[in-house]
Amino acid sequence: MNDNQLIAKANEALDSDTAMSISFMREALAAYRRRVEKPLTTGLPKLPKRQKETLNYLIAFIDQNGYAPSVRDIAAALKVQSSSTAQGYVDGLEKKGYIKRIGPRAIEIIGAVHAND
Image (cartoon, rainbow, N blue to C red; front, side, top):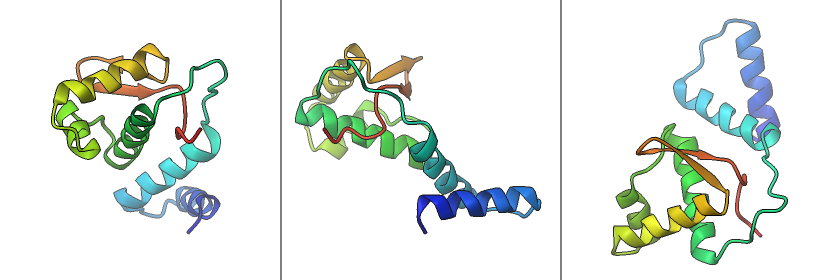
């Protein structure tokens, strides 16, 4: 099912008060975000390969789970042995304006939908 179909089905269910599973609601929300909420990256610096990978992992993890991963989760996903290396990637994304930390573990993605450039 493509994004437009997911969004249409979710809107249809909401209009008719039909029950939806949590996993379907997550998929529909992720589709809506991809379609509608594409933050501008104009003026943001390009990212090195590992920071792109980190950003894409953060986006996917947050979309799937609804919360940000731990630094250890990031290190494991990127296959780096040191959590301080993963922390450095996250710090770099914050300094460049791609993410914003809200508290000790909450991260808001503000600079890109996917770091493909």
